[in-house]
Image (tube, rainbow, N blue to C red; front, top):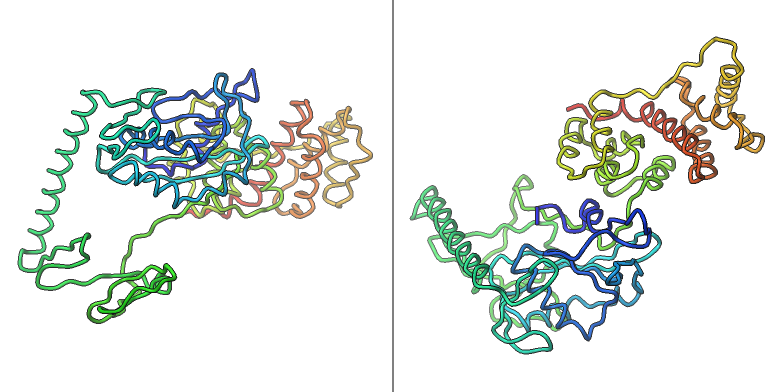
Length: 438
């Protein structure tokens, strides 16, 4: 698996690939990193554990709950049952059955008005993960490996490959440690034993982020840990603070729940000027949609990235959709969506000019427009004839939101396309000039 977060929008997109022929089915198939289950049952944890151990011994993988088998129809799960899963109980059960420890994460994903549960197993750092006892399908001393869509006992060639990689990793670790000791100097280097918590050497200090100090409880040597389950550290010696400029590692925490991002979400959040937690994922999602003509600068502005930084991220997206190349071209060439209303005196030009004035005056009455005539198209197109100095952003966004809610989902490609173009035009006017340049 690559280094992307396991529940990023791109990873979820690759799992939830919907069939164009059957909208309630997935095109995705069970593989070396993916398994589907119709429902979650705590009584089947041992069976799940076997699959998780196989994923851990391979490259990691997902168990997705809420998908029927053959065909892979999306039926969803009862959210309440899945959300009640106690991670501690699952971890304890895994530790009873396997060693070394299996690292995993849990997630709830809303997609197409249904809820799905996902369990992701990380690739084990110390392979192989081996069964310690018998339980259901798990047999003591067996090592499981993921072969395409099945979790089976490991074969000789894969086991030898694991041992060879482990040997090379240990060699590399030794070389790295020796290089660091050589740079520090043997007299000044110390060794921290993670099992005992002791440092051996001439001296040693810990650095703890002051932001998490209030979440810790310290006990002095000779005192007992409290019974409330609070995390404790054995404090020997004095506790001192360090300067705020100290560089400390940071771990990004991802939400336990996501909702599938689609065209309507990208447009609606822009029209509502809704701040999103993951603007870059909205930008990336455009690469997977049917059209690249969607608001993008609003999300770039929220991400605080430059155009060049966004282009770099988009070029790494793995998709065959033409929306990706179209979006990259848009950003590279600063595509302009504005139009000029000709002074030809034609009925269409006169109608567009009239609607433009009505928009500038804030007096558009959608109830007076027949959706089956060209008037609706002329109204939408006239928005693109408004420049930045004339734009009343509050009124125009409100108007576009009404038009979008009334007409976008109708089976009228011409109207839908014009709505998207006008939204892109307003997006350019409002946010392209606000994007950070350095």
